[in-house]
Image (cartoon, rainbow, N blue to C red):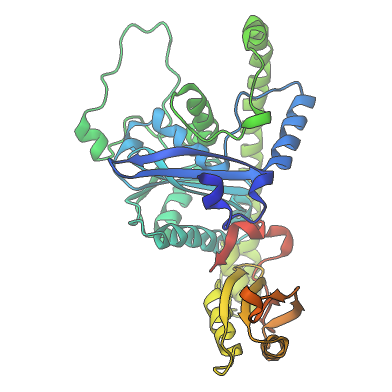
Length: 431
């Protein structure tokens, strides 16, 4: 059933994809699932790269949806919610929405702490707002709380107020529990239903531990039972026995210890160097703005506003949306033409401000098809009109035709550089 349902919404052929799902909610008459699909060739490439490094993963998870593994470590994430978990890394941001501990929405976008460090927090904030708007547009209620993890948690003092102001939702750190002593005889009492329902933190939040939220989620996800999204399906399914790996567990642990120590030391050193460099650059910025503008500021965004005279931020929404394209298609078909629409596909990328349109229909003659094509060409936002093949209609009545066009309005330029833009398939508005 899933491949058939996904056939019209995937940007690639479902026959060439790996499709899987995990349950979200179940009633007597309804089963809600979270579906995932990825090109099979891409999964094969990933497995080949891991194999060349001597790794053979038992399962392959799917982006931001993996963050639902945190519910096995943090009891408060099993509350009715919805609760939004945002893992802001160095150059990517993963967002996962949980309802009663189940992932109901997930999205990964480009950009993270690097945007904040370069003074482009507006771009990161716009991406988070669009993600939240997409979740709300699906008919979901607003999240009751936002939990921050990833590299952004290392700057919790500034990130949490910024997140709360940007999304309008109370924000806090992901309370990753501390490592427990396996020889400890005392056990902590499980949380009460009231604590879980009220989302009371069960562990003290630590920025250092919250920075590894994604790693903790993957680890907990692999240790938990139950059906979950796994892209190792069909011919790609995991078949190798784990006995040989278990036999080398002691050696692996011994070898991993110095690597972990080196990694922790490198992380600490990098953080210390970056903090010192940031303080030095902010001091220089304050001195320069004081000398040039007679107004001291340590905020890069405020300094840019002073330099550019308060340049207005570009509108994050395109001027020509899918709804505008639908209106243009209706206007391009004259009233005197009897037209039967068989298929209409409109895709518009919010960031690149470009898209494509495909129209399949039935008209009386080739001349009527050419009239519609000419009206498309007359529209300023329709480019590269490509008439497709034609065929006789049912019972040799009328003419089946197809028209394709590129969507781009003059003057509606992208708001971000191409190298900073997420793949267009992840941010398209579709009708």
